[in-house]
Amino acid sequence: MKQLMTARQLKLAVLASGRGSNFDAICRAIERKDLNAQILVLISDQPQAPALAKATARGIEALPINPRDYSGRDAYEERLVRELEARQVDLVVLAGYMRLVGKVFLKAYEHRVLNIHPALLPSFPGLNAQQQALDYGVKFSGCTVHLVDEGMDTGPIIMQRVVPVLDDDDQETLSQRILKEEHELYWQALQLIAEGRVWIEGRRVVVKAD
Ligand code: GAR
Image 1 (spheres, rainbow, N blue to C red):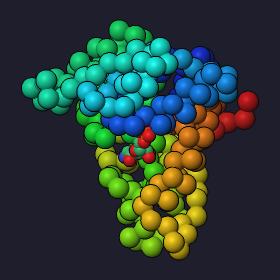
Image 2: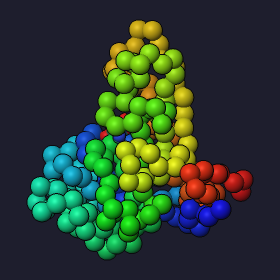
Image 3: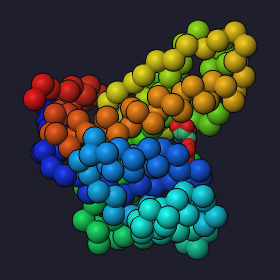
Image 4: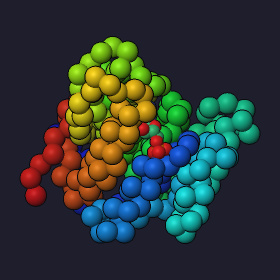
């Protein structure tokens, strides 16, 4: 069994494509000192992403990197990796980053990229997970923090939270209920890593007592 990371103050980079509410929730946890980490940079693949403005407002470096400016995914990810390495980032936190992570990125940051997904994986990977859950008719859904591998939302699961699906839910109400849990779950998973308590063997992640 391998320790994901020895105990430390985490140096994070957050990658976000949109709104950035998970980014904000992680920032608040750091401010409250619930999470022992610092965010060195917020990177977005969408130059207009509200997450960039949220970072700037908090005094965190906001860096747009537009994949369209590169010849392909490898070249784009080489730039990403250069920026991450220049800042000596420990962990990369995907927070609403709507792009598959490729081999260049994963080779440089194996077991060091986390994602949050708004469903109980392996159910409902990919886009519109909340609507997928409604369409299927499940009675419970939730959110998952997992390590990123080359698949679509397929990496080893670190933590999950369950929420009920109510009869009168629509995509908006279910998404809100899940999002509230996401905002708690992500920093808690990160804090367990900061405490050096997260271990991995194959697909299984184990959280050890202090
Ligand atoms: C969150 O619900 C996150 O779980 C989801 O996008 C939203 C981003 O919100 N991510 C995915 O669906 C990834 N497959 P935010 O920008 O407000 O954090």
